[in-house]
Structure formats: structure tokens, C-alpha cells
Image (tube, rainbow, N blue to C red; front, side, top):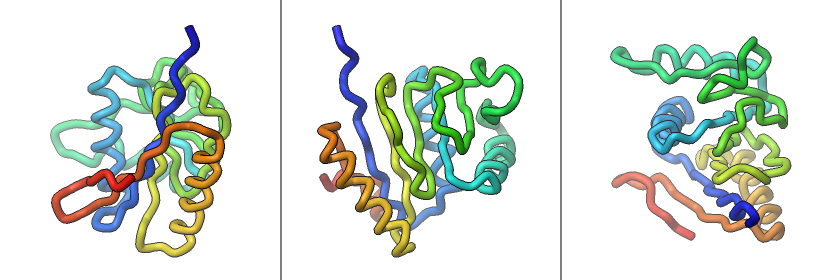
Amino acid sequence: MADPACEVWFYHMERSSLEQVLPDLLERSLARNWRAVVRGRQSDRIERLDELLWTYRDESFLPHGLAEEPHAALQPVILTTQMDNPNGADVVFLLDGADAGDLDGFVRCIVLFDGRDEAALATARAQWRAIKTSGLPVSYWKQMARGWEKQA
């Protein structure tokens, strides 16, 4: 039996920054027993997220590693700028317009973008069109005053 198609969820951030949103979404993924890959385009952003995930909350941290570190395959969350899936992740998070690449084997792809940035909006719209054309199931979540609301 073939694996079900990867669901692609677009998260339109308007009230919070990536640094506020990502840890919560990663915690939710880990609670589902999913492994995650966080894919960005800029190594400096990945380095800042590496520090953030150790320190974002006083009482806990998110176990993670960088793709180029030893034992990356054992990490529940991998941060990378590369297209691979070194830890056999179930979910991939795309930041800053990172390319989705081949989504076979992933259960979900989360595209996070800043709705206050016109360039980020344009990139997300292009990603939406490309993924929609590929036939994968897509949904769009917008950050509202009450939290995330599914718009499409």
C-alpha cells in the first residue's frame, strides 16, 4: 500500500514571529511522536534557532541537533539548510521560502511565512501555486486574534 500524500499546511504569521511560533509547532509534532526537519535558506537563521530551541523556555528545551553534527539520525528535530532528511522525519518545516523538494515520505509539510513581509507573501503564494499544481493536499492557516484559523 502506498504512503498517503503529504499534507502541506501554510501558516500565515501576522501576530507572532517565527521564534514564537516554531517551538510550539515542534512540541506538537514531538507529542505526535513525529520526527521533524526544520529547513531554512540561511545558515545564520538556523544557528539562531539552534540557540533558541535550547533556551526558549526556562523549564524545558526542545531536543534537537544540526544536520552536520554527529548522530544527526538520532535527533528528533534536525535544523538544516540542506534538502535531505537525515533523521527520517515525518514532518518538514520550511522557513524563509525554503524549497519543499521531494515530499515523499513526509506526513506533513509546514510552510511558515511572515504576513507582514511582502516578499515572504509573494514567495508563499508561488509555493502555494506550485504545490497545489502538484496535486498534494494543501490548507491555509492564518494567525488571528483567537489563534490559528483554517482559511482554505
